[in-house]
Length: 223
Length: 255
Figure 1 (cartoon, rainbow over the protein chains, first blue to last red):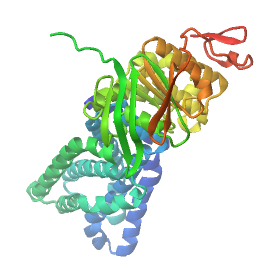
Figure 2 (cartoon, rainbow over the protein chains, first blue to last red):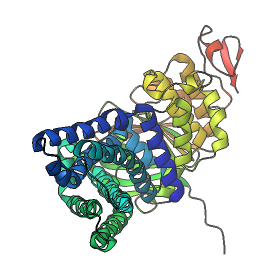
Figure 3 (cartoon, each protein chain N blue to C red):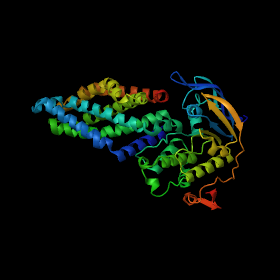
Figure 4 (cartoon, chains in turn green, red):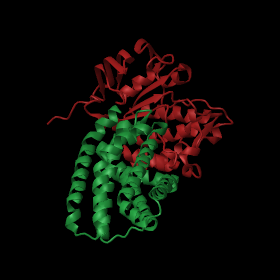
């Protein structure tokens, strides 16, 4: 399983390295979203800083949808998905590999978006490690759910429009927990104030990773 | 403990019915293919040839009936069967952003194949030098087909399922393909060739079955193929065949 996961993750990251879709299209989209949020909120820096945590995670969610759609479309052309099925590759390894590749791209995007939030909104981060931990856990959760739902919809012609409709509500706990942790980190609160939300992210990640490992194979065969 | 007996049939279908929604892809197929046998599956478009191969590869489940591939039920031994079967389909299963050699390496590794066979397979299909480093998205249809064939020959599975194998290939590549099929058959590989044009591929098979409306409706014997025979190739094309030694305008041997 781990060998297959590394193989698939390496393949997807190599494809991203060549096509640079995440870097040249998804990242600019995320930054544009942050700028538009700033326009919508007006010139008041305090209001922008207050809204920064939520807007950061909304931008991350939008970027996740695009990253997942790209991950699915890579396997849709020239029967690549059938090629993977025919290879007899371990479905759990395939799921983990694709999730790792999406997560790696999201981490890079989040670094850019976090820098954007600090520069555009004047957000001040008092407890950086809480931000880092929330981003890592949130990214795992988003990649785990996104990869699963992407596979579920991969055989449908309307997957591009259906994916955000299904994924965004499912990912709401990540948005909620991530925002609360960021608020605690920006307010300079004690780690305890964000701990319950970190626990929520850990549980969310564990549940969806387990579900993905178990169900990805059957989903892949029927989608 | 006594060793498990080898199956006499590489592929066995009994009353096989496969559906796509409510549309029947296979409508009760009975077919036995012995281990090491090469069978031509012929029939008009829509007869069910491609569906038969996809069922044998374990890509399409049976709605009813029985299927055994190398003595195994693909529904219960999915990974095992798929690793022992190779399907050359209409799609090449390539990633446009990966180079030719990267595509072949990934496909062979994903299938748990022997990576030492990758370079010889690429050489066999002329996928060397600059072409090997070309992104798959820039290849012609025929070149993509060659890459898919390189994957198949590098993996060298026990059952080859070839769907319209000559489609998109030039004369030189067709000759290489014929050589590879004969070599595989000589090595005990079971080969099913689906084609709506029986002429060019009849030389490769010992038996032909005709499909109509999702059923096998006729069967006939063909002249048994010889693993040493050399399919003819136009003299002006033969020099382009990598590793090909020529005798009297025919490819006599392919390295």
